[in-house]
Image 1 (cartoon, protein in one colour):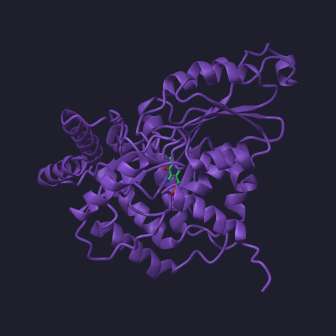
Image 2 (cartoon, protein in one colour):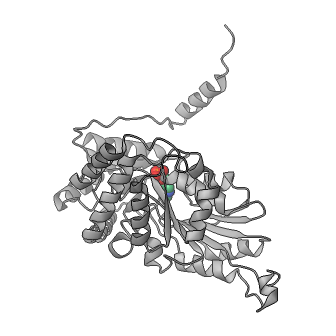
Image 3 (cartoon, protein in one colour):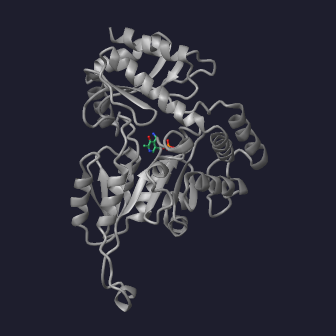
Length: 396
Ligand code: PMP
């Protein structure tokens, strides 16, 4: 028989197996009794009756799918309602909904970084931003993590338009980006133009850089009532700031959005390939996200509770000698001494009824393995006690 064209894949699989880095899927049964600190349902809304009813009602009204791309048949009044309410809640002029946060990030970066532009990207950014940089026509400079001076230096080298791209809360360690300093670096990169005709002709001065923030882990958790990290930093609605969000974490649904000035959002409608060539967000997902957003407005205390649960988890685990990063939102990252230990801890937690995330290389480029715990606003004190006890026992 002819040799398989996939021999190289089998070789990779063997290497992965030798390194103990094989990933496997573990389908979750509907009646799972596991206490879940692995998912991203930060506010405990994914199974909230108003959210599931929002999904069901939307599916009954609009169907199981959007039927087409947004510019053809896939824009419903429900999508428009969600976009209006998302923009208003987060303090931006306009919003555009995508079928995932991943697609929203690809759209924001590629559509805002044309040929001849510079993209300055934090070394800790999420894979979807990294892929946006890879697909964009502009040139990318990756800069040290959370380092506004490095951003400033990178911006000095630009010869055309520039964007600075950063997660607001980094998904691996849960630390926050220095948003105020990043916005200052973007604005300082501009030079005032002269007044009158020369400014009109665009011959003098130079615009600042735009700041593109991925607020996947900030929406619902950071800022008054969870209005997001851009809101908390006073950057929401600024003419030079664009934020992306996912509907799949705090809002307990699926999908993503880009938020920004109306003319920037109009540009995405016309230029962003993951908007134009992708089927619109499923109505059920839009309905669930809208219901969750309304719950957030009615119950703003959920955001503060998620943050408090994260701090409590951090304080209790570090008091027991575990090494963790002080959380700025709902993600708590606990360092493990090796990938094998991280796997073993996670397996022992699971055996004791607790689901935790386990990050190992190559998902973590710095080579440091971690348990990743997500705080949830709906965790009871009893569940928190249990989770802390199980993790400490697993470490022994
Ligand atoms: N950005 C960040 C920081 C994320 O953590 C994620 C999800 N893991 C995404 C974007 C992608 O969002 P979605 O899952 O909605 O595609």
